[in-house]
Length: 159
Length: 159
DNA sequence: GTGTTTATCTTGAAGATTCAAGTGTTGAAG
DNA sequence: CTTCAACACTTGAATCTTCAAGATAAACAC
Image 1 (spheres, chains in turn cyan, red, orange, purple):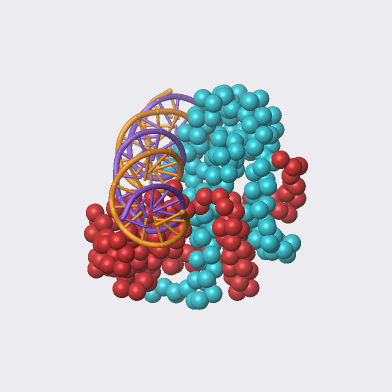
Image 2 (cartoon, protein in one colour; image 1 turned 45 degrees about the horizontal axis):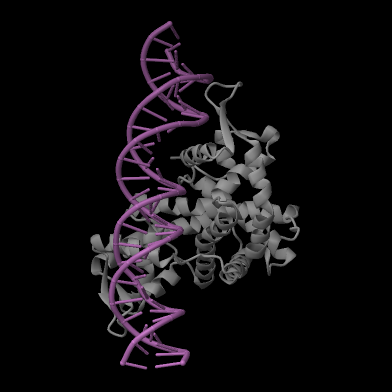
């Protein structure tokens, strides 16, 4: 291993701030959603993505990609949501090796009920105090970091 | 509940990009550290914070704050690291209700061994492709978001 | 065609995190 | 100097996530 270039002061400051956000944002979102709607942020993402999809339906692998999750994680959570009656799985008529996840009416009602408070929470946790310019900067930075992660070859999804 | 202000296109784009980073960065860091050093990113943070502290020692509550963790989470993880011989807990002579966590020599060796690759990983996952200007923007944005989370009153640490 | 690899998904066990409750300790109120 | 509340943890059970393995199904090699 070659000698690493250590982070300089500015990089370290940015890194610590980012880690703080990464470790605190998830729990904060979970906390609000569990309290007000009985679902985790990841549960919410699953049903929200389905609610925006054509026919409220997505292939499992597509849903995993859109929710930034491993197929394994998604499979377990969809099973849970299925027992709750919010999602239903059916074989894909187009291909026998893919499975479709479909949002039920109850699932749709759950998203509709949870969305307003969740959006307010996102607004107050993330966008409060940020200028319009900073919103654009955030998009550019986060998009670049996401690309870096994807190109790194480190596991971020599959298991 | 008042009618929420939905996110506009720019906000939604920033939000999706940020969620992608939040959900993928942790697993990517864990992946590299587990492969190369046998510890999770959170394990690493614990020993790294201790390694930078005076006498390699911190009170549990202080360590929890610095690692963005609940006391409960920290307590479980320190117990694990203790069985591995990297950390040791001792009563605080200054106050009978606080506990000190101390990094052992083995723990120090583990940090020193893991740090170079970890820093390279952080560099390639986060800073690669970001301009100097963007590093400063990231600090400002992440710091503001962290403040928002702390002021929200939603649980992000304790359990 | 047959065998091999790749893709999609599921499962169960192991490990990690949270949640709720419990143990002492300290400080504050009266 | 009691009582009561707040603080600093710890613990065990429930839940969530990952990891490794396995089940089909399609694609590919020959």
